[in-house]
Image (cartoon, rainbow, N blue to C red; front, side, top):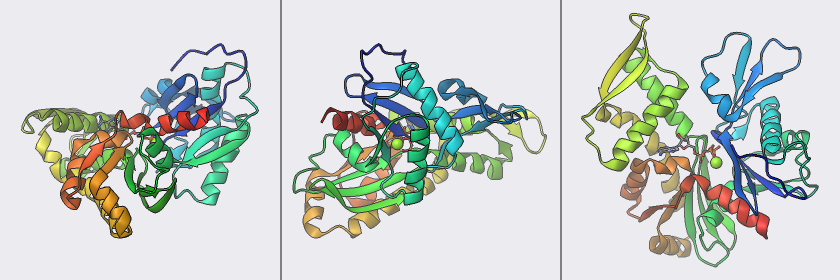
Length: 334
Ligand SMILES: Nc1ncnc2c1ncn2[C@@H]1O[C@H](COP(=O)(O)OP(=O)(O)OP(=O)(O)O)[C@@H](O)[C@H]1O
Ligand SMILES: [Mg+2]
């Protein structure tokens, strides 16, 4: 989290509201705030009292007593808890601006391309309640494409897959707009869940959300560094059979099926998008390849599986987690 900046007047801000992370961006300062999208509340207070948000609230997940409650504003890419979203927006804008109000100009917020009217309205309500001024919503895949420096305004097809924690959006863009798109509500979070379920059902071993996330990053690291998949991974949790805390040792390759099953859902969305793409745009994609953005693009198996299924060149954008944020910064500057 960055310290409060001392601008003479309030800067115009943009919010990349993600299932896993919230980022606040200004045109001059770039990413000013980057913390987990999570809040901890006092559960027994008559009105919700915020105990912690962002980075401070993350270690509280799965570790609260009955008088505390941890809430995530978003699930599967869209707002599901208005109260938590309001609190998180207030916390983030206070970290960036201090006690000042946001500028009267509009605040930009990225939303999944398939967000329903109701989902968009809920997000705007939370943002207005947090005094973010007039809200302008922008489609996330377009922002990611701008952030990945694709020539989206030209009469040429660019295919991008934005792989977040809650959603994955495959889109073919030409002349500034999406021509074909598919959204699947799977991402890094559902992979964490699949890893936890696998250990539960196959090994009768329970792990929490944060352990599943760490384990996934360890598996991603094995794949990116080309480390030996027979090497043992130490997993800490609770055995269902004994009820006792314990350590499970498994080789990296034990998770092969879970990973391929998960990524196959994304590959399916990419293939369907390509199947619906008009031939001239397909030609452009053949030349340019498919660009991956978002944090989950950092799992190398995804690019590999998309490449194998489509026969196309698959390129992970530079610093893929920040493509949407870079796109927002670019939009703020114009
Ligand atoms: N090195 C890595 N390898 C694999 N996955 C990663 C890596 N780094 C981050 N991730 C995953 O990326 C996801 C976060 O990405 P990102 O910040 O783009 O999502 P988000 O914007 O919060 O979600 P969404 O846009 O879907 O609502 C998390 O699920 C995280 O586990
Ligand atoms: Mg995102």
